[in-house]
Image 1 (cartoon, helix red, strand yellow):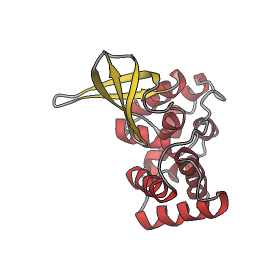
Image 2: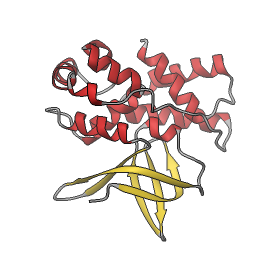
Image 3: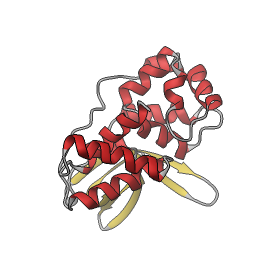
Length: 203
């Protein structure tokens, strides 16, 4: 099983990154929190990896910190939560806030994440409330970094990332516009997505 991957970033987007390792390109699915911290394309990166094996596919899930990977594996252990939903959950709230919500039993906050219904949220809190205490907090920050491309491209990519997370396009577009109006059209993509998620989590 692949547990760690280190190589050059060949391409990246808000849902995945292609890591060039000795001429082989590995597609690694990542949460938005890890995307925020990726260096620029062409730079070296190291990711903690979970290899998910099925009969018809082998999929790599990568994380910038061991703590995010540990949270992902805990979520995967909850009944009804598969790898895609687990990744969406980690993308839907900042790491520290998500762990805090689970530990406090705040299933209402977890329910604000697209794709997480009341029953699933309740199971997550019930099954992970005590286990979440083993996770570190304060270690998965999101540092902004500028990207190439104009404001329109950045807005489109931000909307696309949010739609992939499960938000309706019109709702995602309205939220992105609010952030652009407040922070300016030149807001980097990573910051734009992060701030828009904050707006959406507040309803």
